[in-house]
Figure 1 (spheres, rainbow, N blue to C red):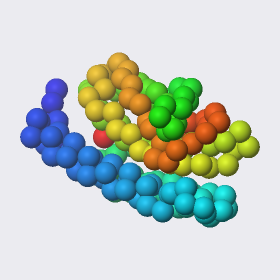
Figure 2: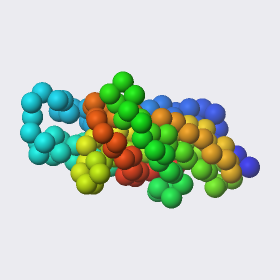
Figure 3: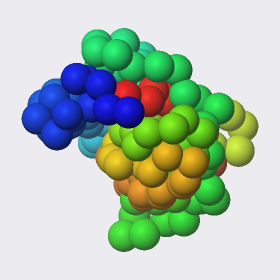
Length: 153
């Protein structure tokens, strides 16, 4: 049974709000994350600030439910200098849902290198859907993608 919240117009409005929040999160994550001779400590600090900002912004999504347990990060590859990991959301509810996820990239010592946000729309009820999360900065080595936070909406 559909509720007023699930009407196509309401769902599209929610998607538009979520897209705006995701764009703001990405902008926050990009700000100040450049490889222009900064020290590793200053870059780590900026990566931590970006991750914290992304986490704070996720709380702004109306009607969002913590869904970190629904989301898994696959292995990371470097493509064109960026770390890319496949993120999969598995929806155990009885209606389609959208997921907004913060993804943290860490080195082998657990140091935060970068953070980004990925949105997976229209994950079917009882099904799974995947999307690629791409780092904002060029990263080298084999950084690990970890789910920072995930919400279902």
